[in-house]
Image (cartoon, rainbow, N blue to C red; front, side, top):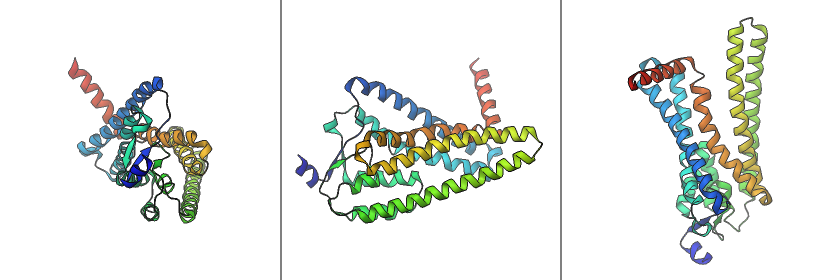
Length: 270
């Protein structure tokens, strides 16, 4: 079967290891999370695009975030939901589909450099046919090769360290400046708003950062594969569900519009 799979460019997805008894509850939980995330993000886009009072650069910038969240969740979760209900031996995907999924997974994760990363990977010959992950990503793809993947590993690690360092540095500088303004300012309302917004933002950022770092670095340690899978799934489902609440409802204009629509709908139902 393995030779036939390799010849026809069909890959076997390892997926998430769950017992038959737990597969249906996990499916329901992930489905509800997916519906919630999609509903919140699509609703935020519709709200901003249909209300002329929200047609400002800041609000259009908010549209970019839910679009990215929709992409990141949709490219991974529907396929994962299918695989949860399938037998482990029936979770197949073509190599072309896997490369396409890996590309969009990494577009969601942030970086144009992944075009080069995917290019470095697909140049490798393949001698294996099992994706040791719930979904396809670059690290899972180059593990299919028996050739030396030193270049891929070195490039990936160096770039990841640079991105993480830049990200942490930017957040540290930004929050240091915000803290200094709050300390020197005597406006309690402004300080309260800043603390409320920053606390929710930093919570989402920590979840994303820890999940992404765990997912990237544990690819090098096969014995922690289940922890890596959990981190990778969290990276794709937690932020898309929280971002609309953090960045949407924390914005006064959007929050007021949402409350107005909510009450008008309740009145119409009565």
